Length: 124
Image (cartoon, rainbow, N blue to C red; front, side, top):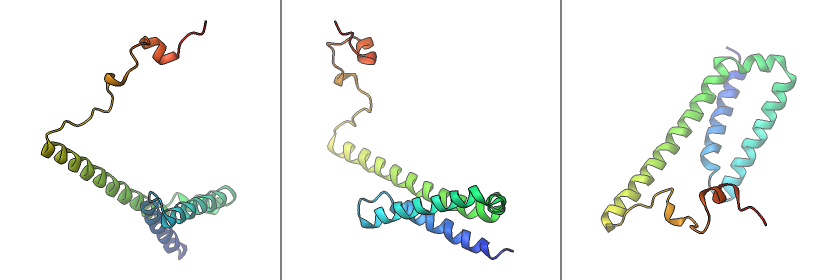
């Protein structure tokens, strides 16, 4: 197997780690976002000018580690979101309050018609 395959497996792992760190609003999150942006620019540039790299990008040696890293990150994020939603439901049940609906007509300006709310008022 091509020794560069290990490099791309490592790169995929690094991208996956940085994707996990990127949402944090601190120095580490900023560095992770900037690193991933730089790596993606580098890969894009290399892909544009190298037919050999374009060919390699179609191989399982490149796609599998990258796909695995992205799936892992997606699964972890989905689990965190589900856990957070469950905690909110439990807290609401404990306190006896209802969860707020995402879309509620109670917040609508009733002085405007539905059409005016959608497209704006006609100026005189």
